[in-house]
Length: 223
Ligand SMILES: [Zn+2]
Image 1 (cartoon, protein in one colour):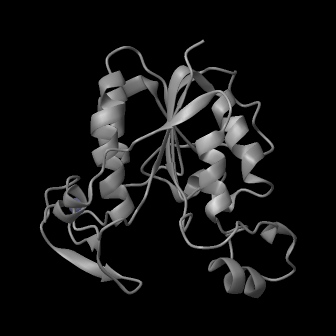
Image 2 (cartoon, protein in one colour):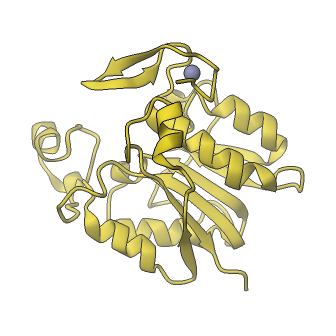
C-alpha cells in the first residue's frame, strides 16, 4: 500500500475506518482515489490553457493541481479562510451561480461539497454543469450515495445543529444522499456519466477498501 499523493506507506484509522488517512500527508481515502482519477482523466487536459475549478480545495490535492494547471487553476469556497493553502476566492452557492460565465471551465472538481449547499442538489448540479465547456468534465464525490435510502434535504431549515447532526451527521451538512442521486447523475441531460476506472485492485494499492470512496465522472456533451 502506497499513498499516490506523498508516497507514504503508513496509514492510520480515522473515525473508525481502518487505513483511512495517510500518516504522511493526511490524505483520506477519497483524496487518493481522486488523484488516481485526475491522473488518468484530468491531467491530459493540461498544457492547453485549461481552466479548472476546484471547490473546497483540499490541502493534499492543491499542490499537484496547481503545478499541473498553473494559472488555469481556480479554487473557491464559501469560507476561503478555511483554505489558507489555496488562495481560494469567495463563492457562496447557490447565490453566486452567476460568478463565472457559462461554459467557462474545462473541469470542475468537488469532493463532499454538495451536502453543504442549501437547496436542491439538482439545481446545484445544473448550475455547475452550466459552467462547463462542451466536452468538459465534472469529477466529484458525495457521502453515502450508494446506501439503500433516498436523499433527504432541507437541513438549512432545521432549527438546531443537534437535528442536523442526528440526521446528517454534521452540523454543517444540509442533506444526505441516496440512490436517487446516483440515478439523477446517470440521467442528467446534456452529458453522460463515465467510468471512473478505479478498480478494487487499484483501491487496495491505495489503502482503500473495496468499493469505498466512490466517485462520479460526468462529461458534458460536445455541441
Ligand atoms: Zn500521503
